[in-house]
Amino acid sequence: MTKKAIVFGITGQDGSHLADLLLSKEYEVIGVSRRASTDNTGRIKHILQNSKFLLVQGDITDAHSVANILKEHDDVDEIYNLAAQSHVAVSFKQPGLTWDITGKGCLNILQSIEDLGMKNVRFYQASSSEMYGKNYDTDREQNKFQNEHTKFLPQSPYAIAKCAAHHMTRLFREAYGAHASAGILFNHEGERRGETFVTRKITKWIGDFEKSGRDPEFPKLRLGNLEAFRDWGYAGDYVEAMWMMLQQDSPDDYVICTGETHTIREFLDVAFKHIGIDDWSNLVVQDPEFYRPAEVDYLRGDNTKARTKLGWELKHSFEDLVRKMVKHDIEN
Ligand code: NAP
Ligand code: GDD
Image 1 (cartoon, protein in one colour):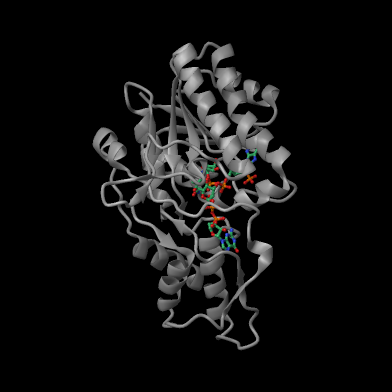
Image 2 (tube, protein in one colour):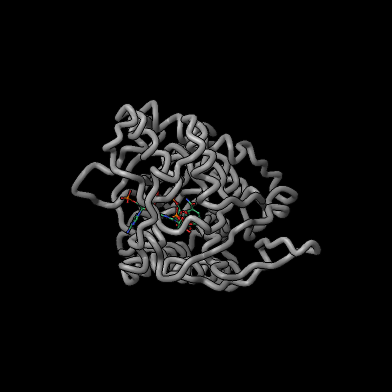
């Protein structure tokens, strides 16, 4: 029988990849998009005419709007909450808005599921490695890592809102028996990544620099902290893990990551090497504007549980990811 899923955050990087995956599995997909004064469907243009895809308007900060969408589609099998104000730096400037969307929005969906008695629906919450903030565990060789047992020590309004949503998801599972799972996803990137996240900002700049014919007058790439470590994977691989979580008999939380970590400086090295530049120091300027009031210095996940319990596999290496992004931004 055809399965049906609702995706909140359909117009985002992950929403678009997840929609592609679900449609390839013959799902009917209902994508929820908020009203915008300009077109926000750039990442899903290629599926708008698909007869199995329906785009509906809604905003997760509005409980009435969420409830109406769920009432209208109360026969869905799966609901994915990928909607968020997802930019960490922005969350310091707009903490209230971030709270309403990234924290309370999740509650609005969970409460509607419960109020409408949708006992058979399976729910996915997009949790984040940002929730670990300053914290990590260490293995016998003193290597740092984070897994499902590492305590959260969030360092931004975004991460605090994500912690609230994460615990709310667990609570609805334990209190009401909801089939609610959270994926604690580490940074994942790709050709559809928002242009203000550091990886895409770098590859987009390289693409534009190449298109300028390496014009010596081309404005320099302005970045903040280059020493933070991130565990970067490819977004297309990560949406498969989301789907796998909802195919399990029992709901649970899973860390999704590569297990490797690199600094922003290393990302720059690999990205510039793709255009034959070994020394990028005269092309990049460190600008205080892009430093954060509080930083997350080190993220490196342990994906053992996802690999062993879900059978999830990583398909792209760090080098593949950077190559894909640079190539895309040079060609498009
Ligand atoms: P993204 O590209 O920023 O997409 C966020 C989506 O949320 C967009 O579709 C956005 O709509 C939508 N949205 C924002 N406010 C909304 C509202 N009030 N009502 C309804 N929709 C709203 O984020 P992403 O990279 O795809 O990430 C997906 C989810 O995973 C997010 O929750 C993010 O916090 C989380 N996450 C991401 C990563 C990562 O590395 N990418 C890692 C861990 C967790 P518009 O297009 O209209 O703005
Ligand atoms: N965005 C940005 N822009 N970041 C910069 C810049 C810059 O110009 N310069 C240095 N950075 C550093 C940030 O300080 C941070 O240490 C690192 O680059 C990564 O920043 P982002 O790409 O903005 O990602 P993030 O790690 O803060 O958050 C992303 O990953 C989280 C999972 O860990 C987002 O996708 C979150 O939504 C997600 O939860």
